[in-house]
Each structure stands twice: as structure tokens, then as C-alpha cells.
Image (cartoon, rainbow, N blue to C red):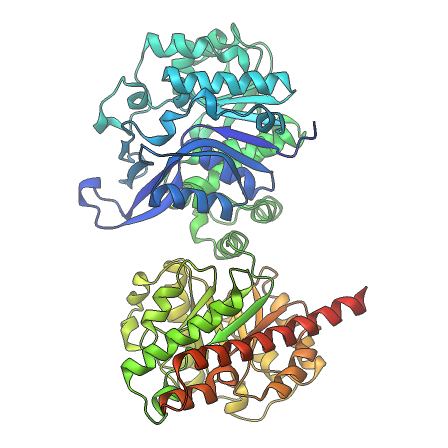
Amino acid sequence: MTKTLDVITIGRAGVDLYGAQVGGRLEDMGSFEKYIGGSPTNIACGTARLGLNSALISRVGDEHMGRFIREELARHGIDGRGVVTDPERLTALVILGIRDEERFPLIFYRENCADMALCEADIDQAFVASARSVLVTGTHLSHPRTEAAVLKALGFARKHGARTALDIDYRPNLWGVAGHGEGESRYVASGQVTEKLQTTLHLFDLIVGTEEEFHIAGGTTDTVAALRAVRAVTAATLVCKRGAKGAVAFEDVIPDNLDEGISGEGFPVDVFNVLGAGDGFFAGLLKGWLDGEDWPTALRYANACGAFAVSRHGCTPAYPSLQELNFFLKRGMTRPDLRNDAALEQIHWSTNRHGDWSEMRVFAFDHRMQLENMTGYTPSKGGAFKELCLQAALKVQQGRSGYGILCDDRIGRRALHAASGTGLWIGRPCEWPGSRPLSLEPSLGPDCGGLLEWARENVVKVLCFCHPDDDDATWDRQLAEVRRLYVASRRNRLEFLLEVIPSKVASVTVDTTATLIRRFYAEGIYPDWWKLEPLDEPEAWARVCAAIEENDRHTRGIVVLGLDAPEDALKASFEVAARFPLVKGFAVGRTIFGSVARGWFEGAIGDEEAVEEMAKRYSRLCAVWDGARARVQEAAE
């Protein structure tokens, strides 16, 4: 049958709660970052980022953490058909910390967890047969039920010509030979574990482990002797990870000296966090192995991916995209602390964002000052009206992708929170309305620490009234505010939208907006999104797009704002903007809600009529944009 998948990984799927503080005891951690985790899950995410069609076979609980894993797999493009929801057991958790370069305390919460209930019934022959390779990890050989599931999958893999790989992944306490408080332990001798592993090693084409992991597989702490003991029972290629010394591969006889094995280029980076580095390594190795590269090249990929992993916080979040890996290998390493390499981190951020927002139809009702100035406005009525705006947006969206809202927290909090999880793109303003020089909403705090409370799906939006002719003092003050917010957004892993409106400051030419864009990039500010006023001349749009693309080839793109323009004027501006692929759509507000809001606040129309009218206007604008884009595509064909 056709092989639609490159790799299926089998085994642990859990949630990592990573201590945000570095350098202290796990006992003293005050906050945690939440990531997807478990060795085979990490590897599946790592290979997906490198462009391989990846899938996972595991189990998760029927609760919030299980849904989080499923959603993260989907965001990474990983096939989750093999992930079973266990109705009785909870999703596994791991609590981890970074103490120093050598100590990484962790606690496994895996008592009767969902993924250890994986059984033979969960293994579908057709699904396994659709993969070019199957990878399993050692933990699932530690229990008869999960072992039976693994062996069944390996049998199907070999029957249907798939390559098989083992990550020894030895965690003594998951085999029951170390206590709960010894999650950091990497090696405890056990004849029983060695015997169990050796009964399965012949089933694999590729076996990967650290020196300690080969010690347990081979039954001796002499690494060469251990590798020879493994070789005695399997013809697999053996890849031994040696930490700072890199890794070596052995296809045939094990030599007397490990240095005589096949090696690949290594990368001497500063170690920040070794947890998950082996999974990143294996993802890179699989990329080379399945692409048919020679072992030096595959090991080079693996070493590079491992280098990224040890340089960053977390496991899966640290792994590179294919674009990032290629950039790193072509450019080379410019500093050993990769997490502080600005160019590399920008590519890492921009090529690992989730979600397809290639089309953007955004209903913007983040306005505050405009509503507050309307007759009949009160804070409670303002909040209620924004809930009606959300209803109108959802009425048009109908669960489809490519729709979004801009909504504030000060007046529109209830609508903002209700929008979470609806599939809408959600932008949230930060500027104090109408301010020039720019000032931010006080709720953000003097250090923008308020962003810590934001939902991760919220996009930070800031409007800056600026012009290339601004005096130095005005530019410096506004730039400082934008930079402060931008840095805080990245620190909190929130996307950033920068809106600039030069026409409210001074007259504009075809170069004005492009010049502003270049100035922000020159200051190290790389917005995920640009929100720009309509540009009447195609040449102005061409210059804007050139300014963005020459600085950030991975930008999300541009949305066009409305400025309370009538629908006919917006239609004309959409016709021009739609010619440029970098323009993804619109973000329009008062054209949709302006007169409706005035009527509603004055009591002239009711809730249902307000929702219906705003939905009609929003839907018409969506149709106008879609039509303009369709005409461009038809002309190109």
C-alpha cells in the first residue's frame, strides 16, 4: 500500500510542567510553563517540524490535559488517529526544573496513567502499514500490556516493509528500579531490565541510546563491551550518544575504541537544559535516515537538533523547523549560547508559529474612546454591546477558519473571554486610545507584566500614530514604548501586531509607510502582523511589501484597516490591496458597527436587530474581500 506517513512513534504522551525559574530547587519553583511531552511525542513533534509526515500512537485522558495534547499534535500537523482517549485514566504529567548545567530535577506523575494503558487493541494494522518507519521507546517495554502493544506494532511494521527504530530511553524509576524522587536518575543496573531489552533488540533496524542506556541494554558499564553485547543479538545500526563528544554510529563490528565509529559534525554550544535533547537528536537523525542521507550527514542533523534542544527552555518548544536547521547549517554557529542568537531566535519563532491565517477577515470592535463618546454609553452597556459584536462575528464565521476579531479587555472583557476557543483569530489592543506620543493601557503595568495573564491565543496589538518626519524626541519616545511591548510579547510567547497610521500625523507619499516599516525593522522589531491603512496606489503597496519581505520572509502578513470608510470606499481599496499576496485580508470596525452602536445605545434598536445588521455588514465586507482576491487569482491563471 501507499506509504502516506514517514514515521509513527509509539509510547509516552504527557504534559511537561517546566519550572520557569532557573537555578533553584524544584521545591522553590513559583511558576511553570506548560508544554507537550513524553519522548515519542517529542520526537513526533521534532520530525514534523523538519517536514516529515509524522504520527503518534498513545493514550491520553478524557480531560483538559488530554485535549491539550491532541490540540498540540494537530497544531504541529501530527496525525493523531492512533491516539486513544482513555475514559478511566488521567494524562501523565511531569514536573521539571533546571537547577544548573548538571542537575535537572524532575518528578514523573505516571501512576496508572493513560499512556501506560496502551494495549494490543489500540494497534491498527492498516495504520502501521501506512508508515515508512515505526519508532518505539524503552518505557513501553517495561509493562506486559504496553509491551504486547509495541510488539504487535513492530510485527506489522516488519510485515509491511517499514523500518523500525528504538530509543532505549532508560528511566530507572519508570522501570520500577528507582524511587519517585529519583526521576533525574539516568542509570541503575538491573539484570531484569537488561534481559527484557535483549529479547526485543533483534526487532530493530536502528537503536539509539546514551552510553548509560547501552550499559543497561548490554548488561555492563564497559561501553565497548555493552555495545558488543547488543551487537550479539541484533544487526541494527547502533548510534551511541556521548554528550559533549557528539555521537557515533556502528553499522557492523564494534571496534575497540568508540572514536573509530562513524561520526558527524558536532556543535560545541553552551548547555542550558539537557532535558529532551536526546529526543531532538533522534528527530534530526530520523530526518537524515529517512531521507537516505549517509550517516555523517544524518548525525550532523541530529547533533544540530540536539544543540538547539540543550540551548533552550523546554523540550518540544526548543526543536528547530527545517528552515531554521538549514539556516543554521548554512550560516554556521556565531555564538555558543544559541538562545541569545537574535537572528536564529527570530527564525525559530517565526517558522514555528501555529495556525493557518493565510486569509484574514477581522471584525474590529476594540474601539474604546469612540464608544465612550456616544450618547447613552455606560461601561456596562459598552460591555454588553461588544458581546453583541462577538455574536455577529460568530454568526458570520460559522466555525470556519480565516475569521477573527479585535476586542479590548477594558470594555469588552466578557466578549474577549467568550471568544476563546471559538476558532476566531483574537487581537487585543494595548495602546491608550488616541495617544501620541504612544502610551499603553495602565493595566499592562510599567513593565508590561500584565501580559502574563493573557490567553496564549491573544495577539498583542498596538497602534502607533507615527511618521518618518517625526522629530527625534517623538520617535525615540514612541519607539521605546513599542519596543518595550514587543519584547514583553515575545517573552510571554504572544504574537505581535503593529499598526501604523502616518496619515493622521502628516501628508503621505508612496514611500511613507514603507519607510516607517524599515525603521522599525532596523530597531530590531519584527511584528508577526502589520496593520496598515489603505494605500490607493499599487506602487505604494509594492514598496510596503518589499520593505517587509527584505527584512522578514516569514512574516504572517498585512491586514488593511478601515478608518470608518464607507463600504464603497473599502471595496475600492480592497481591489488594490488584494493584488498583493502579503496582504492577507482586512480588520475593519466602525464601518460595521458605527451606526448600529449609536442606534443601540440610544435605544432605537434592540439586541437581535443589532446583531443581524452587524452580521450583514460584516458578511458583505467578507464577500467583497473574497471577490477581490478571487479576481486576482483568476487573472493570474
